[in-house]
Image 1: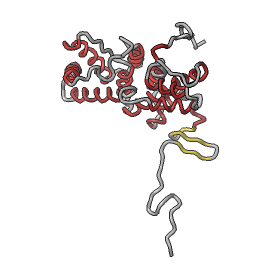
Image 2: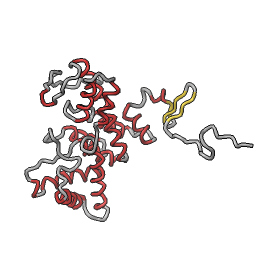
Image 3: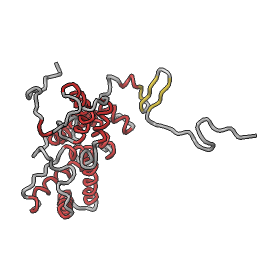
Length: 276
């Protein structure tokens, strides 16, 4: 008598499992929590943490994740991912197609610095754990980066900003929430070591937003891959906005020159008090 095949696949193959979401009639469980109960109780950053890490974060970590998501939401028309989105949008593709083109525009040199900076900081902390001070580790890292011609290092410097306001604010929030520990201490020490290096006297290499995100994610225990995911997730709204604006305001199939654009949006304004 012939052996019947398992409905789940070839003979001997076990069914596969997922620990993310369970669906049954009239119920959706995300990491064990009812999705409808999370709605209105967990903010977007907290829900992302739950999905990516398996647990809801503390309020402090949730606030930091939200700050990271806001920090990377958009950076104008010049980043490669934005240009990829606008170039796709001008062809008449769908919104999802244009946004997907932008996501594919991320690479080692655009959007990859957070991962690379985290590795750099891990190298420094390995030195610290041998008994050397944070300052010693930062000095050693700075020397290595100069010798190997890795200047600017990942997480430091910016092509537009002499001081990245997003990095300053994120590190400030981390300090206010008392999430200021070994990664953050090391990245500040490395910033100082780079500034004091004799071969970098004419270079300003402050921590940028990628470096701040790498350090903060390290201090709150988020794996490097989660930081990378947060960067991609946070930029999606900006890419969607650029795709919509391109198709609403510009003519199809235009040649997009990012150096010739001007800004005609609202002038600088203060955030209203939303507690009222």
